[in-house]
Length: 308
Ligand code: KMH
Ligand code: ZN
Image (cartoon, rainbow, N blue to C red):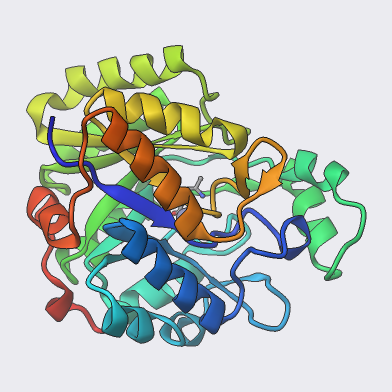
């Protein structure tokens, strides 16, 4: 089977500092954990930023630029910047850093949805920062806005104008049809790199039947024009990515999506999750793609054509 692309999502905007002392927050922590993850076998690094003082998700270009050049200088991994930011951010805020950095790859969320984080709040006893509890609890009335107009803006601003290609985040079958719609409009070119996202409360649940369902729908809609990757939240991360690897797909791990390395055990580093999934995928006969192999498979523009 083809080489397998391992993506590592270093810090994200879902988890908060009180959930794990190992969640990268500062530019130093994000830089160090990104380099380690690439050395462990991640070909793509999916990156969000945080306020270094409070750990709060940040869209500020200066927070991204405090680590992007350092990672680029120390690793040839593909830098994939989030356009999702955090569901509480307006679109222009979410796009400020990717517009400035002009990365090879960005995430692109294929539909407006609920993004319910509040169940996590019940499990936290001591809060490090006063923003965390309301951030999580207010997600019961939070809409993660990704209208067709928002999607078209991102495709034009970052894709057509700045040469980025996309990790299309599909949280349900309907999002696959939305991607098909944009392909029919000529706003996206194959090969499509589709991230099947499982286990977010508001998207499709993480179970093998749903992975087969997403795969069947994607096969019908995109035929040979796509490659799928799988990310699954929390305890579902390793089982679903293992299944994806056995199916010929690609995988995404990282503390953005799960804080654990095993049942009841916090991951101390992103690289530990990368090393774990790498051992598993090699056992099922796959070998990790290098960053340049990932670039060739996905048609990326090259690290020398970014503004990082
Ligand atoms: N946090 C993941 C479930 C993005 O950054 O644009 C999806 C994600 C979205 O990574
Ligand atoms: Zn993300």
